[in-house]
Length: 267
Image (cartoon, rainbow, N blue to C red; front, side, top):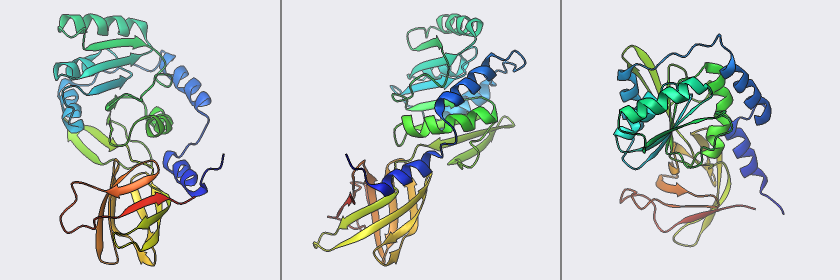
């Protein structure tokens, strides 16, 4: 089976994979088990601020990695979310389960003892973190490859290295960061306009940063947020939804935006 080269290059650039995940998992596991790394609870004001920043909605699924006594998952459950905490320390897992029961949230906030690199993030709408900086960076490939475009990552205290956050706030004198998982838009696309003419759309991507060209026109005002892409080329504004193999007009695009066009990945 043949795969188009540029999308694969774009995906590789997007995830910035620096080491095999198996090695990363062992490193993170060793760090979590290290007794010199203390458990430091997130202040309640920061917990609520993190959930506000994520715009967590009822019915959404939240996973808290390194969940400690369960306070973030329990607070999410109180907002109507389905929450799961992942923690390696069995004593903290037991404490979190007890806290969830006392809060009346044992059905909506569950806790598992597991390696945070082993748990699947594919069903999460929001992932929350309060981990060490090096673990955040080691988690970055997993977040980018497992989470769906448009889902959110919120971190207390530490950033993600060279992946710039979409939002950064000081809450109760603490740093809180949020990222939106971007679609893989990088690569070559064949764009067919409404009048039947076509041009090659060449996109370079680094996380959510987009540059490139449509035919001979350089993209300007390019922005990618989740699976929503917008740019201007040749004086024409495009607002789009990025899929695995297609880019199509955004139904919520402004009236003046280009319509009736479609782009498909070039083989």
